[in-house]
Image (cartoon, rainbow, N blue to C red; front, side):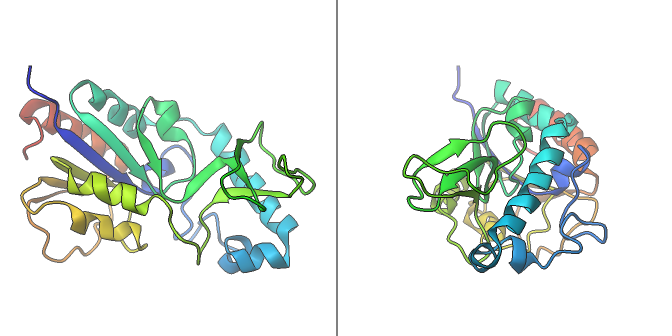
Length: 235
């Protein structure tokens, strides 16, 4: 039996919209009313950590109530046919709850906290809240396990390595304007078939072997699923 092809999928906030989670770039986005630097930067944390904790508690509560949608579930089902790696910009865990078994969270995970004294100390958050006074085993305050603006993206090299080995590459629900994640498509070999699913197709420039599906995540992923399973990755 031939080895399964490597399918690498980059996802953004658009895949979670149909689960009821807002994007922060839309007119009614989750971040509206907040100065991003106040709630998603090391400077914001230093200035008002309790505001930051409250903001992420709000996001965590919404994410925990949300349910995986058809797009999440279809990506998990593709593991029967391909070696699937999900690289997500999302901090929710809808991919895992939808059944995907290899998920790289570029921007961190909403349901985890980490020590402010030693970044390698990472913990699961029980329930919806991480509060002021919650400490690590060293006695230091815990912060959200999120990559904030101005911080390094620790898993970027790992994600780039997967992109370079992709036999098929897909982009779902991301505008490809947030770097460094947006640059991953340029690590994909020119000969690799590439799919992009987005109802608001971004300007992509000259990318070879690109197949555009101008639809929301659920219906677009359904179309891609059928193509991939029927043709083993070829448009």
